[in-house]
Image (spheres, rainbow, N blue to C red):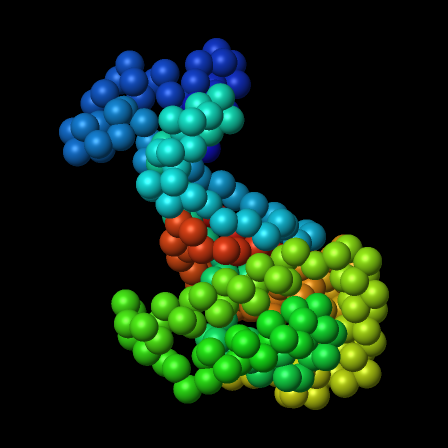
Length: 247
């Protein structure tokens, strides 16, 4: 429900759009909102029922959104960024943002199929770059860590489909055989059983999909009813299952 120009909400009887209504009745909007957003709602309200995993995606930040809108207004109708707030209305799970680098390094050591897909050389470079380099925002260590993550993740995303198909079978075999011992007993954020169950579930929905391996790079988040998570613009994410409000 919202005023996004690509598909604004409509009155089912009159077909009048919510965009028309708020622009014709400016009293519905505060002066602060109207002056900043041009008589448009600054959010899009959605209720989702996720029965199968949705695609991995990231929304543009404000600067990129403005550039895309200016370059291609037909396909990018909105020049605003798209942060999201997700509130669970049933038990919910999803992927959000990159894991701590030490966890990714752990999975490169304990999931052979992941390391094979990333490539041993790229994995070694990543682990060497991030080992013991916690750093703070803006320092050289942080820049090196980001570069190492970008390189390893790019290599993964550019994997050949035939390699993904082959190695995904090895991954699922490992998950089923190891169970709660999967991926070196998991990591600080998730248990081995949680990750093993996740792999089997996702493979059942999308066999041999690259997203199986991307899951080791992203935070796997589980929410109970009423809990929420916030996604900044640019945050890579995917909703996997459950019901939730999102805006």
